[in-house]
Structures are given as C-alpha cells and as structure tokens.
Image (tube, rainbow over all chains, first blue to last red; front, side, top):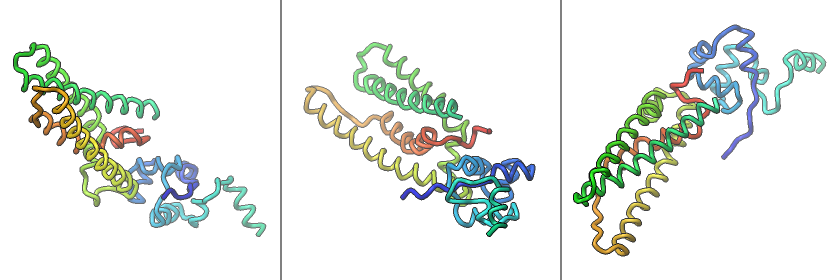
Length: 83
Length: 150
C-alpha cells in the first residue's frame, strides 16, 4: 500500500538551528541518510519518528509535518493567529 | 546523486554479466577439456571482474553490511528498504533457479550429447547471487547508499 506523501520543514528548521544532518540524525536516533530522505520527502516517517523530530525542534508535530505542501512558516503563523 | 545511482546500476550490470560469462566459460572448461585455453582465460578474467565489481558495489558502498545487518542495528527506513529488497530478491532468486532448471531440461532434450551437470561454479554463483541480490536491488533503486557520504 502506498500512503500519502508527507511534506515537512525539516531542512529549513535544521538550517535555522544550525545543525548538520548527522547531528540531527544522532539526536533522533536514525541514520543520517534517513534525514536526507526525509528532507527530500522521499520517505514518510513513522508517527514515533515524527514526534521525536518535532520534539527536537520544540514545535508541534503539525508545524513540522503536513499532508499538504508546506507554506512559509510566517504565513502559517499569521493564519493561525487570525483563527 | 543521479550520477552515483547510474554508476551503481552500471556496476550491477557488469557484475551479473561477468557472473554469467564466467559460468558459461567454466562449464566448457569442466565439461569440454578439449576446448581452447582462451575459454579458461576469459572465465578467469570474468571472475576477476566479478570480484572487483563486488568490492566496488557491495563492500565499498556498505550495501553488504546493510543487507546482512541485524534489524536492531537499523533504523526504521533501513528496515523498510532492506525488507522490500529481501522479499523481492527471494522471488527473483526463485525465478532464476527455475529458469536455470528449465534451460537445462530443454537443452538436454534438444542438444544430443550435451551433458548438463550442476557445476561447482554454478552452485557458488547461486550462493553469491542469493547474498548479493538484495544489495543489488538497493543499489538499483535507492537514491543514497550507506557508503556515499553527501
């Protein structure tokens, strides 16, 4: 069964935080190439891994992962504030 | 990344093509000793290419380790891709074995005097194939493999 594509902001968040793929991989307990696959959106993470990554960035899981293409973070925050 | 994948695919083709050439040559070396020594040399050359391409494709890239690692040592994506590669390669391996048996059976009837035996190189090649097929599948399909540091 092929699931839906999961979009994410891992690359942007990782660069903002100034950590390498290897560092992020070590923190969330995966191989560094898996981080590459996640960033290129070639792999859908398990729920557990999605939570671990979100916890690492200190953000709710829906700010890091989405089933729709990701908007700019500022745009999304503005929309949330309006609601 | 695409160049690395294309490179890996070339090595897969070279590896299995030479394995096939080696088996054909060694069949004649063992079964037809009266044949020219060129066949021996070609068979040995093909074996050398198989060994070199094995190290280049499976050992150097870490694909051998990946497909032979315990599940505990892998992360969730690696478990997923190795599981897919292992299950598909079981299917392909069964097909290859059945095709070899079918070819033997058909040629045995069609070519009089041809003595088909399961030679040591053939058995060795099948063992090699069983071990390398999952890694070759990953080399063929994956964007990145363990040994390719980005």
